[in-house]
Amino acid sequence: MALSLRCNVKSVFRFVYKSNSHRRLCTAGKATGMTGLPKAQVFSGIQPTGVPHLGNYLGALESWVALQDKYSTVMYSIVDLHSITQPQDPQMLRENILDMAASLLACGIDPTHSILFQQSQVSEHAELSWILGCLTSMPRLRHLPQWKMKSKQKNEGSVGLFTYPVLQAADILLYKSTHVPVGEDQIQHLELAQDLARIFNNQYGEFFPEPRALLSDTRKVKSLRDPSSKMSKSDPQKLATVFLTDTPDDIVLKIRRAVTDFTSEVTYEPESRPGVSNLVSMHAAVSGRSVEEVVRLAEGMDTGQYKNVVAEAIVQKLQPIRLEIQRLKADRGHLQSLLAKGTAKARSLAAPVMTEVRKLVGFY
Image: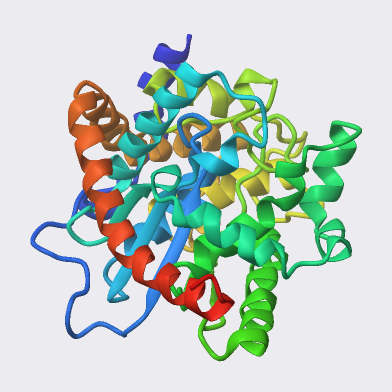
C-alpha cells in the first residue's frame, strides 16, 4: 500500500526539488582552524542512543554542518559518558557509538573541518567534572528541569543523572568553548556552564570564557502521532518518528498515518491545528522554503494530498543520508579509525587546559 501511494505522489506533487533540495554530504578540502573565519571555539555533543531522527537532523545536525563553515574551530563529541545515566547494554552501546559516528558523517560532519570524537576516551572530561562538581551546590542542580522530569519518571534518579549537567559544563569548558549550539530546552544547562565558569574564575583567577548560546531557528519537529509532544527516539508508537535510516516506503507510511484533523485545507496554525502545522514545518525545513511559501504551494490540495507532497520532500532529503549511513556502517574499522584520530586531536586540546586547571586548583 505504501509503495503504491508513493507512486501516486508525483501526480500531485508538481514542483520537484532540484539539486538545491539537499546539502552535499561532505565538504572537501577544508581543515580545522581555517584562517579567515571568526576566532571561536564551538562545542556540542550528542548521546549515542541509536540512529538520529528527523527532529534531531533538522533541529541540530543540519546546523552543526553549517557551523563548520562559520567558525575557526568546531568540535562535536559523541557523549557516551552521558548515555550511561540510563542502563545500557555494553555491546549495544559499542554499536550505537559507531552508528552515531556514521550518522554524523553521513549528515555532513567533515573530520577534516571539525573534530569528531568519543567523550569517554578523553579522561580530562571526567576530571574537570569532579572539580566543577565541588563548586556546584545541590540546590542548583535540583532546580534544573530535566532532573525534575527524569527523576519523577523513575521515582528516584541516580547520582550520575543528578550530576550530569556538571559533566555537560565540563565538556564545554574543557576546550574553553566560546559558543555552544543548543536547543531552547538546554538553555538552563548552558547557564550552569556559564555560572561555573564565573565561579571558577572568581575563586582561582580569570581562566574560562563564558560560553554563549547558538540557538537554531528551526521549529521543533513534533511526534507524528501526538503533535503536542516532540518527536522522540523512545516513542513507543512506531509510526510517530521518522528516522534517518527509514526507507522511502517507511516514510510514506508514517506521513500518511500522521495525525491531522477534519479540516481539509492546508494552513499553518500551531495552536489550533498542531498536526497539519507540524507537516508544514517539516515540509518547509526539508525544502529550504518558508512556511508561508509552502502553504501557498499547497493551495487547492486537501491534507491527504498534501501528506503525499510532504512525504516525497522528506524522502528526497533523507535518501542520500540513508544510503551514506549504510555505506559507512559497512566499514566499522574506518569509523573506529576516524574516531581515534578525532579523539587524539581532542586530547591535544584538553591536556594543556587541564594542566593549567590543576595548577590553579593547587594539585601541583
